[in-house]
Length: 400
Ligand code: PLP
Image 1 (tube, rainbow, N blue to C red):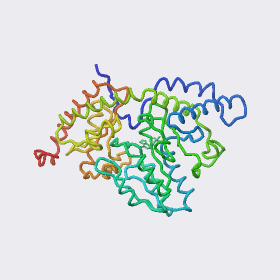
Image 2 (tube, rainbow, N blue to C red; image 1 turned 30 degrees about the vertical axis):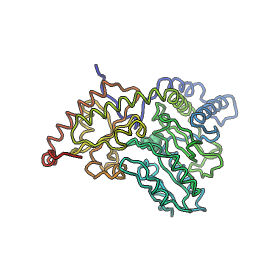
Image 3 (cartoon, protein in one colour; image 1 turned 90 degrees about the vertical axis):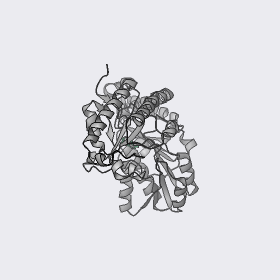
Image 4 (cartoon, helix red, strand yellow; image 1 turned 120 degrees about the vertical axis):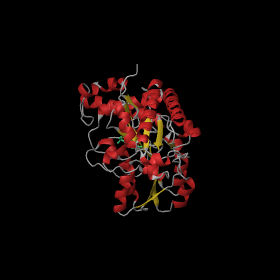
């Protein structure tokens, strides 16, 4: 018997792993000291934070003093872009980011334009891959920052970060990557990639919400965006979230130890899902990397489909009624029902961009859940298309 509701929104957030929660618990009640305090309670907390820093640094091949704890990916993205823009503005005011970045980057870039910076976007192709030749053609002597996410949260495309970093460094620009969706899922070595900054978040990998880290290469100049106490080597004020940091490092440690197992398991669910949807649901488009690239260039958890002739929200609500939690590409949370900026950047027409649904699988999902979801998708799509006037006119034409 299948247990409802089913959670297929693991790219939005994940439940805290019980082992992580267990590790965190004493830091709420027993080892509660402020790491800034000069007594035994403080020292115990410092020990925990130092251990967490060592663990996270070790996993990504950084030095412990290159790890700065933050409140999550949004803060890391804001800090990287704004902090570098402020610190390097005497050298230049040109910034390049990808058009499929998270809102944390896009909105920070927009704010910097108002402050006199220029922002250009590197092109992506129809599958979401950055066009490296285009990047080479737009990078300038006054480019100070090149930023591209390691893997896209909506369509799962895994980007060529090492190549992007090499292009940035040829022009002495700082290279940043948002690894919020990739950290704990892909094998990451910051030194091998050559990035100067990398943001990470805990709640995508079965850790607690509201905590993450920014890797800042030693020697890089960066301004603070949160003024306050002396925490994080004078760079980020605010009493350290000790329990959160402990939880993040434990979640990262577990994710790293179980990475291959989870990668294989989650991608087997995802591949079965993609195959069934493509074979059994007419007029669908798999957004992001093509099917034959899915094992290498798409996040293992990700399947993003546009269902032609139907609004994404209608499918989302139908699936919610059937006990299946997914996410739609439209920014409905803003109340605007704007089509996804990611899908538009990939060149999808508005109609298809509006009809997209992201399914993101996790280590707690099962094949039975996947099969149940496909059966429910088929029913929902058939019912919704029966009500679509556009489908009645065009539905018999083969969609390619
Ligand atoms: N960057 C990416 C690619 C994300 O997917 C997210 C969260 O969805 C964020 C940044 C923001 O991270 P956080 O929720 O930790 O602020």
